[in-house]
Image (cartoon, rainbow, N blue to C red; front, side, top):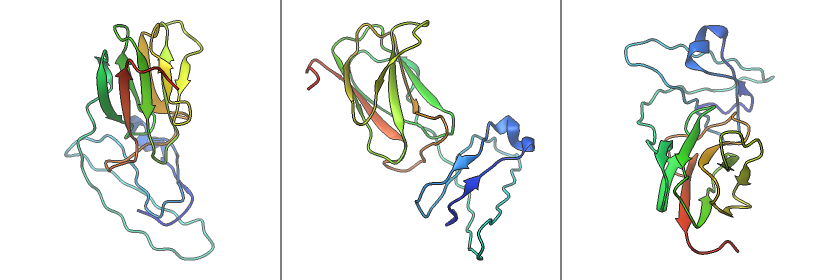
Length: 172
């Protein structure tokens, strides 16, 4: 965690981990999530670019990522997923779904749900916390991600966790 309002960055040596500079929000606690392997050593360099001294506490905690969004079919009901790593996106097969899709998210990230009508669709329908309902048909693929692929949630309630719901109730 850090109280600095700057950026976490990664040197080329950690490129295999897929890390990129990660923007810091106004939240006084900052977490950097990345996939690692047990038994390997990782190094984190913290620099203070502020004009005054600052305190930094570092800790490491392992967690099991949310398993949803790895390409499974979504044809009815609801599913809860999570964007927990920078650059991560969740995908669902909605080719057999009908009705209306609702996207519910109320956290600090800028999550969007994209409905693609096919593999060559360059202009998917976008659902976000403002426009959070759309007819699912004729979409075949649903992707949930951070709008800029630059931020991620954490293994805690409300940050990066979203709900997708299919129902027959029309959008308002």
